[in-house]
Image (cartoon, rainbow, N blue to C red; front, side, top):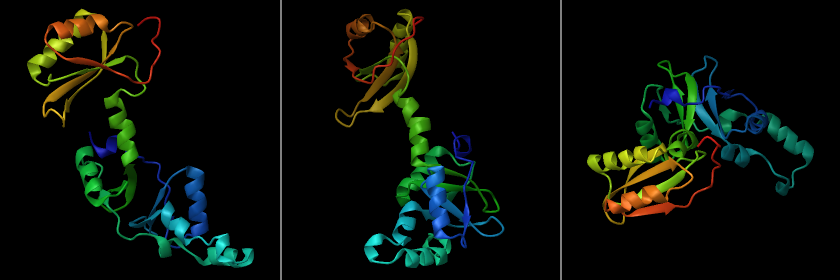
Amino acid sequence: MYVSEFMTTKLVTVTTGTPVARASRLLYAHRIRRLPVVDDDNILVGILGERAVASGLPSASTGSSSKEMANTLSKLTVGVLMHPEVLTVTPDITVESAMALAQENRVGCLVVVDNQYKPVGIVTTNDVIYRILSPLLGLGKPGVRLHIHDCGEVGQISQVTGLIEQHGMKLEVIHVDDSPITGKRDLIVQVVTKESDPLINDLTKQGYKVELRKRRSWPLSEDD
């Protein structure tokens, strides 16, 4: 999967001359945490985060009068508080590479730019959670979740999916997990069924250790 497939393309940007007070309102209105900063030619020159905005805004605890605070806000611009060093990626980079870059630099977002260094999107670690990790974990999908220990080989996986098919169950999620405890590979499947015991019994007969993992209960439709 490429960054272009799930990046946010509806960007809200500001310039270095934008008043910080306006930038603060934009963050609040659009429910976002960061604003790419561009110049007059829409070239990326920095990024402004909500923490930087919060640190730059005067508070009542400073003892300043409302007039003094308003005067300070009118003069304070994005260029003063923005971070000029921005981690960027291009739309054709893979998600794995993008997230590795974010983790290495301990940042929560990457600005996506074109070959002219103009911002075309933004991708955050939350995007990865919602678009990749959530489906992998079966969040929001129906069914029961089975953890099948020491079942990471191709032949074993084929055997398990064959049993699922025999029982007429719909397979919602399947992935292999490297166990840090045993050092072996376990198979996680999520199947849509009202009764998982028959499948668990057959898997047990084949020599597998199977755990029924607790998860949020999603209602089955009458057709399931």
